[in-house]
Length: 72
Image (cartoon, rainbow, N blue to C red):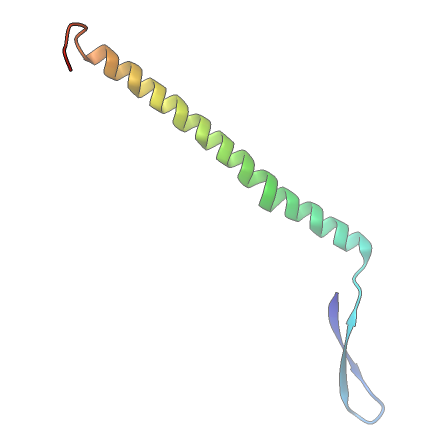
């Protein structure tokens, strides 16, 4: 809904709620879903995968740097 200003015959301003076009409501909901639901979820998944891969790589590197007969 949106607020519309209507001027009466006696000069008073009256505000009323007017329903929006259903096409614009659908478009806004689709854009909201894409920009505020799908993109953040995809970015979170991507960065989590990158983090997991870096942790695995660091573990392999640490294992290679530590002598096999080390107690630590």
